Length: 237
Image 1: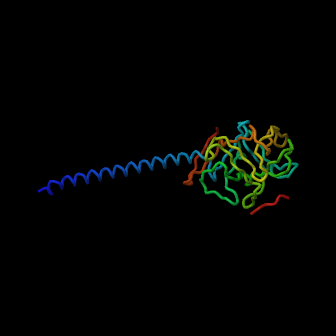
Image 2: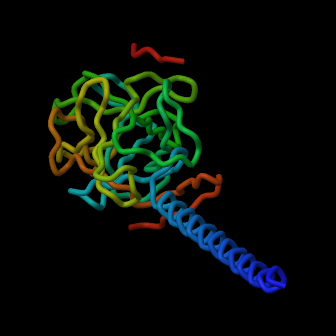
Image 3: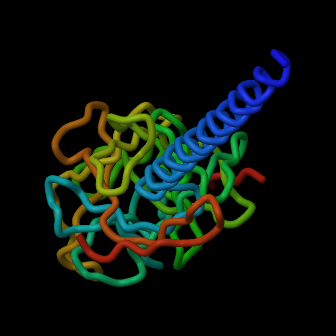
């Protein structure tokens, strides 16, 4: 009779334990889902591999890093890189990994990592070397190479304040080969690129060495994209 009196109690306790376990599982699943949602939201806020962006100079916020099929008349004679106010497709750059360290499409770009910037219209890479710039005689920045033709002169290290390069966040780009910073000289060109500003590399960073993404199409890890509206080696001969 004692056994019969205890059995319902055991059954009730088992039911309670089952409910507790079920609730615990729901809480854990909810926690994981929340973390996953937060993580995805953070990723969407980052500049990612494969994204196509415009870079505005923080000291001159109206100008964008720009290139076009116009060659320098001095220095390397390569395709010129400027900073321009005109809002056209010649200011779009694709963010890619380096030759030795490719990144996966949609992967967030870590601060301190190296990238290449490929000019979307002409397929040439943002490049620098020891030639003198035409207006200020500082270090020239050009667009050079192309698909399947790239070297370490196209490598830039991203300096930013957080773990990943965030959309709209101030960042500096350091040229790896020459240990210099992507910047503006403050000088402007005449014809045929009247009013566009000279882009250079300098040994030390200053107010004109800070850039941020202002428009672009950002690739998510799923392969989807989000739009942000306005706000083998080659040889240099």
